[in-house]
Every structure is written in structure tokens, then in C-alpha cells.
Image 1 (cartoon, rainbow over the protein chains, first blue to last red):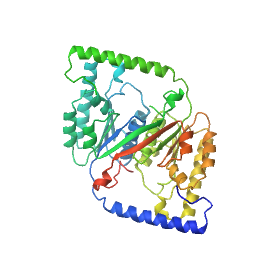
Image 2: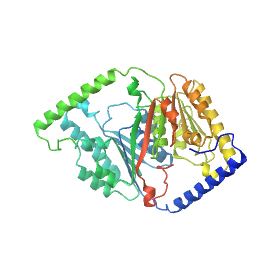
Image 3: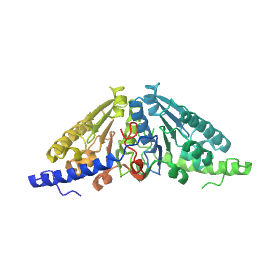
Image 4: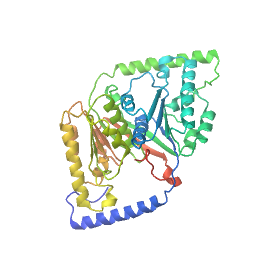
Length: 208
Length: 208
């Protein structure tokens, strides 16, 4: 914990300034070494919330920079989502493909789930190959990999061969180890506390 | 790991359907108990990426549902962000207030940082009190709390007295324990792998 308090004395201010100067110098040195730009393979996994939301936040930033983004949803296709309305406001910058038929425990049909995952993956592959897209989001694709609805080897092969500058974001819990190994940026969302435990239901703006 | 493979036999399909039926039944039971709607106090913390992005994703969903959202940035005010462009497309639904003067290690002036944090917090308080806002995002406020630029007691008091249906999202690493205690939903973003380590710089669409 920092030792300063809001009503700090001048001596504290000087100490604070000195500390911040050191932080700034360290940061400048670190950032000077970061010179490359490259397309990133990004994975959001873990049992906590925020995996899809954080990817969505990146999509929004990319749109804001005038990039074109492809978004493929593997397992939430049947849900009406708030983000769709926002995507619709940027038709030249977002192509949104809700390909899933709902969560797998709603369909109870493995062959149908495999076919849906395959169709979604083909869309992802198309967007990765098409230079028009700067970023591709494969939402909940980890679920499809977890249930072996998609062959992991094929997915890894396509991702390894992706165009140098393209960003690809894969979300979903239980990301395969080999995907984490292949990724440039991996964040695990850990659930610390969840309101469902207090009987609160899924709400617009939060869960969908 | 699941035992099924993509080329599964009919017996596997039956087993899969049975497993999914059980999952669905369990989920239905769980969801039936979730009947309350309430405004949530949400905290995104941890050293990993995605804290701000995930909050931004929730903001986008809320906008998509026609809600009005207030966004106050505590420490990134000086940065040009991609999300601003998207917010600008929904002037009736987002009020964006970049109040920070940059990261603290750039200003090296504790009194100025405290004043900036105070101005930002007053905006957050106003939005919490104003019934026009359904959701308020206090971006990187945890940083201001961490450096004691804001009195934690005052912040907790205001959050405890917030209107019942209002969602408040607080982001930033090092969330105070008392804030986590007070929150309904807490996610910790854990960094598993970061491209800065490989010399890759901050890029549009990803970091800003």
C-alpha cells in the first residue's frame, strides 16, 4: 500500500513525485523496446465473466479505428443480443454471424452441433483468409473445441498460417492447452463473486 | 475431456444426448431460482488485460438495449480511443467523460492527480444520482483508490446508497478488499501471456 494520504505534506508530495519519476522512466525504457506491430492471436478463457465482453470491447475499439471486423458466434446464435444493435450502426465495419443453434444442452443433438460448429468455423476461416478483415472474433469457439465438435489440429493449422497483420480473438472457457501455447495474448477470467448465487437472474446489458 | 470424437458412432450420440439432457435439466433448475432483477455493483480487477474492454462490452450491450450509460475515465483522458468514435454514434445513450490527465507517472504531480480524481468522482456521483442513467462505468477508479487520491469510505458510502436498479462498473487493478466485499459481481483478469514480452507494441483496436 502507498504511504501517502490525501492530506499529504509537501515532503510526501516530493516523495510521490520521485516515485512516479522512477515509474515513468522504467515504463519509457520498457516501451522503447516495443517496436513491432503484428496481428495477435488472442485467447480469453477461464470460468469468470467478461470473456466475450472483453472481446466485444476490442471489436468496438477496432471499429472506432475504422477497421473491418468479422464476428462469428458459435453457441449463442439463438439469443437476441444488445451488441447486435450497435453492430448494425456500423454495417461497413462489422459482419456479425450468429451461427450457433443455442447452447449444446438445448439441442441435445451431437450431429447437429458438429454441423453448426463446422459452418461457424468455415466462416471464421473465410474471414481469416479475406484481406478485407482486420480482426476476426470467434466467440465461444473454445466450447466447440472442448466437445471435439471441431478438429483441434485443423484449427491450429489455420491459425498458425493466418496473415501476419490479422488479429484473431478466440473466447470460451476450457481453451485447449495447445491453443494457449500458440496464442500471443491470453487472459484468464476468474470468477471471484457472481450474483447468480444471490438469486439474481441474467439481465439485459450485463449477460446479453 | 469428453470421450466423443467428431466421427462418433450412434452409441456415442445417445450417450451425448443423455449427458446434455442432464446438463439442461440442471441448468433449468438453477435458472428457475434466479428471479430477481437488481442493479449490480461490478468490479473488474487483476493484472491481466480485458478489465476496461469487458466493461466496454457491457456498455455496448446496454446501449443496444436502449439504456443510457455514463462512462467516466479516471486515468486515460489524454489518450485518443477507438471506443469514442462508437460512442459518438449514440449521443443519446452514452455520455463519455474522459477526466483523467493521463497515467499518474506522466504527471508526477500528486495534488493535480488528486484534483483530477475528485473531478472524475464527482461526475460518477452525479450519474449515480441521476435516474436518467441505467449504468455508470468508473474506468480505472481502482487506481485512484489505490493511490488514495479518493477517500475509500466516501466511495463505499455512495455505492452502498446507489439506486436499486442502477448498474455500476468499477475497473482497475488492485481493487480494495472492501470494494470487492461490497460488490455483486467480481471478475479477476489474470495475465497468462502478454505480447509485450515479445517486443510487440500497443496497437489500435487492442490496447486503445
